[in-house]
Length: 486
Ligand code: NAD
Image (cartoon, rainbow, N blue to C red; front, top):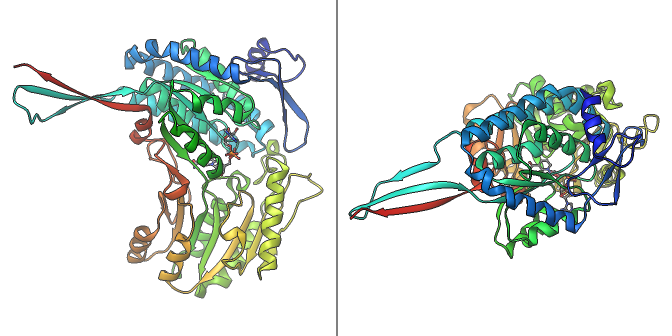
């Protein structure tokens, strides 16, 4: 199927001989996609400019009336077909993802399942009632609330989950009856192109799904200015989120913002330490540490601090580092800015009193983007790693003495995406889940995500939720209808 998918992409390209790609409304410019594990050129993608971005909105606006008026059952059928095709192409999509993103192949396969789950979830959600009655407060009047699609939705996605971040948004928007313009990250356009090719094969009418690749500020800037774009759903850094929030103000768009995180991982005395260690390794090193849910700060209760540090370091030392195709535990980081950030955070923490327990730099033998899994202990709150998103395989451990202290330290951040707590004391768990100002709290486990749950953060980790019924909210609005039969 990879050949099939690749040749379908080839049909649309101008640079034969490379695994190719072409965004919708593409022009003459080219974007080089490189394998982060080897530095090799994987593909050159034909890209769009501001005109292409506008053309995409024209197409989406034109298709909106037909798509939104279609019976929800029919929209659901097309979504179900897309879901089936994504799963059929799972291996191809996973390999494309590893080639451009670098993550271990088993994680890439897992991401395809996760990505597909949103499509089937919102195919089902599309069938739920979209009209609600209201008990009338006026004589002779009958009242209803209709949920209607907002119109064209712009979806802007990051490179760390190149498929799931697209389907989490697109399936909800499409299920609700919106048409979409999608801008993926410059690092991972091929996954987006493959998903959009499968959408075409699944039978979405022309203009319903438009993938536009090019300079982010140009493409997305065009969309934030365009009053026809009624919703903007963004996943990425808080910094870019703030910019797009401001840019969207002039046209008062509906917004979903899934932004950065800085998760605390708290282990209390009396917790199952071995389990906490296993979960801590997952919480830190999944997606090679490049995960918005990645634990950035580990707060360990003093009586168990030494034991946790020793067991955690032993577990981290066993992690394998390598090319994603060989399915190691950790792959390369996406680009050298990520490597610089790891080095800066490590050096800064060490200069402020931290101890290096393992790792600490690039594995030169593997290549320039392979950062060794790293553990720092006795990290002080003044270290940058305790307040800035690291987004890489560096774990910072710190000791605490009591609940009040650890809740205050965990909440002392602009972020509020996810917090992890390990304890076997139900009252302590209750106090922790109450006190932590996070959109998601995971107790004695790491995996929390899935299509049926409302994913999202508090404070500057975002606005709105994705997944679940709540994921439809930004793509729909309520029309109140009051009919007088008098
Ligand atoms: P990023 O903010 O640099 O880029 C995200 C998207 O925004 C990309 O498509 C990029 O092309 C676009 N973009 C960048 N600059 C832009 C500009 N000036 N104008 C318009 N668009 C612009 O983020 P990233 O490096 O791709 O991803 C990592 C970040 O994403 C981390 O902060 C991570 O926490 C966050 N993230 C959050 C979630 C979540 O669900 N909360 C999920 C994954 C990643």
